[in-house]
Every structure is written in structure tokens, then in C-alpha cells.
Image 1 (cartoon, helix red, strand yellow):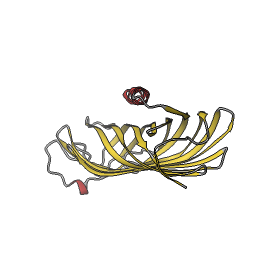
Image 2 (cartoon, helix red, strand yellow; image 1 turned 90 degrees about the vertical axis):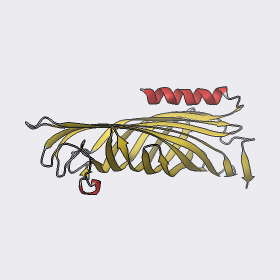
Image 3 (cartoon, helix red, strand yellow; image 1 turned 60 degrees about the vertical axis):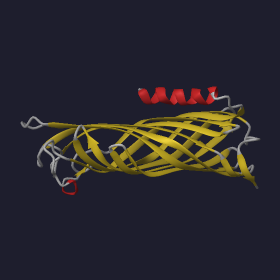
Image 4 (cartoon, helix red, strand yellow; image 1 turned 45 degrees about the vertical axis):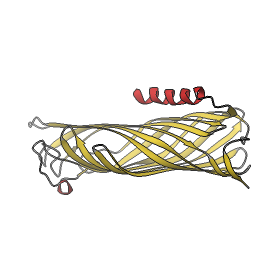
Length: 271
């Protein structure tokens, strides 16, 4: 998977950048039974459809629902700040009946939908406010989305539509952490509204989790992830407009190393 390769490259880039690593970091893997909701509108190949009138609900029309997949991530503290990388996947296959046209597929058609969404998030933050108990850390990064959906007729009518969209979205991030020793509460928030090439969109990415690190080098965690995408553009000369939410609780385990709090990091204010 290209997303995993990119994540490995990003981690390696941090190590090769000459950063003197402060001995703190973690790596984790978990299970994310995410739910996709919202709607997608796709113009016909001839063009000219009013996309507001042909919005296809991913649950009611396509039958998509909750689907479990692996999630993974890693964090490293350096003298120049904190580098975080995470990967998330949603994949589902379902059947439904279209209440509106989807591209060249007419309303009333029974369809089978296969959808894959891959997300690679990478960002850098620095400590704006920090002490032994909490920190507030702003920064910048990127959310990479690979979206691939195929909607195919399962009736006598032979018709299908495939929508593939790759969106690299630069983001503003804000991290917060409360460190109570073996229990740590963390939140990551990312946002951006931007016109990128053929795409115009608003993106929100929230991730809140609690980690238990009182098991020597091992840890357990649980959290909630919410990704909201409102993007319109053109793919293969067909206009589209997608308003989607991907959300759900997740849980898992991992390893951590290093001191409870880094020293000498890029902190503008210590309290």
C-alpha cells in the first residue's frame, strides 16, 4: 500500500534530518470500526446535471455502513518539535437502490458499491505551552486521502461508475495533552479550507484518545476519530460533490519509550 510506504519515508526523513532525538516516542496499532455517512453527487458523462438534485446518500441509497479496519500511528519527540504519522483505512462492499441518478446510472437501479478510503496523516507541532502535566502544541501538516468508489448495476441494465479522487490537503493542527502519569489524555485537531488544483474543499480531522502506559514499555489506548470532508471538483471529466463523514471509536495497543516529558524541546512558554 502506497500510504504505508509514504509513512515509512516520512519517519525516515525525520531521522535523517539531523534532529537530535529526545528519548520519547510511541508506536501503536489498533482496530477502527468506522462508519461512513453523508452523500455523493456525480454528474453524467454528458454533463449538465444539477448536482444538488442528484445527491446519493451513502447509507440509504448505497447501503454502506460500519466497517472495521486497522489503524496505526507513531510519534517522535525531537529538539525541533514533535512529528506524528498515522494511517487509517475504511473499506466496505454493499448493495442498495438509487433514489437519484448517479452519473450515468438512472434512479431506481439496484446497485452494488465497493468503496475504499485510505488516509495518511502527518504533521509537526511545537510546544507553545507546556509543563509536567499538560501541553498545548500548534503546528502544520498534511492529510492525504485516496478515495476509490465503484457503483455497479446488479440488474439487467449494464452500467457502472467509478470515482477515484486523490486529495493532498495541507492542514493546520493543534495538539493538547494532559499527562497524569500512567494515564494520558490527548487530542489532535486539524482544519483547512482550500482550493487545490481541480478540488475545492473544507476538511476537519479530530482525534481524541486516552492512553494507559503503566505496563512497562507496553500501552493500551482507546479513542474516537472524526473526519469531515466537503469537497467538489472534477474526476475523469465528470463533476462531483462529496459531503462525507467518517467516524467511530477505536482501540488497540502499542509500545512507548523514553521519559514522561521531554526537555529542551521547542517550547515558547513553560508554566
